[in-house]
Length: 405
Image 1: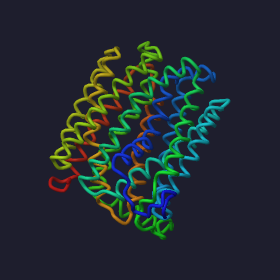
Image 2: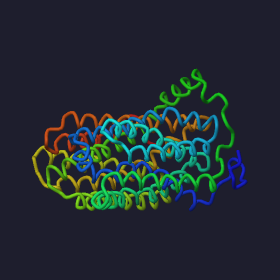
Image 3: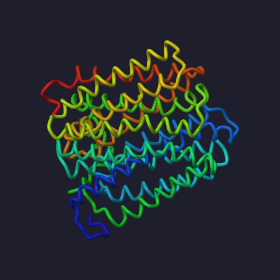
Image 4: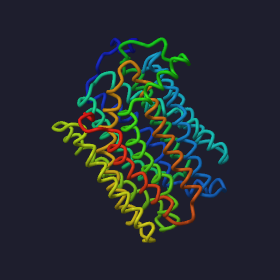
């Protein structure tokens, strides 16, 4: 299907435009979370609830994201990437306005779940678009460039969110998200053509869909890379869900200080994406991903050990997490490219399964941290330590040498 630009299906946009646009689309996930983190305690006080209730609204967002993963991929294989993206952006805009007007925590939780379901379209379609247009190391490089653009969001968002909440209240954060969604919707409508070379009319048939998911999940290499990425996102979401209470309630950081500290932590993710993209130009995927797994394990264990030792200082959380996010950048782009390269006819379904697993594990991690919350950093730091060990196990047992790219 040609877009308003007149380009036909499969037309390749300029790489710089594509990297920026896809990075901005993926940034909707970070903005939906990171912008709201500094105002989490303010939101709880405003709505007259505890921190755990606001944390649950974040889990609801992740649950909506996970549910959408199983829908958007096959639908985009059937009807095309562009229509799904436009629908998702429209729904995301409406849900953002709903969050801004939410009169109670129950309404906020409901709109956040819808928010997550809508944002999922951007995540799934962005991955599928890269797979439509690039292959192997070229795809890994494009994923890394997209992650560079995306990495600006978790650096800037907590700072902007903190000052917005401090000056205009927590609802202003959702108005900013709504404005961002409107800009993206206009850009996609006028600037992005369909990338899917050929639609699959059977992609959404229940029987075919179940068989497709079965084939995807039966692939040993795919499962290995899936576990690597799931562990990365579980550790990240453990920090996202637990750090507001730990750093602001327990360690006494102000909202603006939390925003600055969070941004500094996420800045290492941007540095990591730059380094991994350069390394991918010269080396294979496995050469990049193995050091990332070793670094993530070391940082996770350091954070877990400091937590169990009750080192009650913000640096005991922030410094290991900064290293964790640097290692994250060496695992996710190459693992994602390698996993997606295993499938041609069912790219959308593979992207959906990948996203569903990552987000389901993330939501479960947040729920467990909330359940075991005891006023200390231990539930959060322990979860991150466990997540840090999983990529090494997955690479050792499921991704055999010579088959990683």
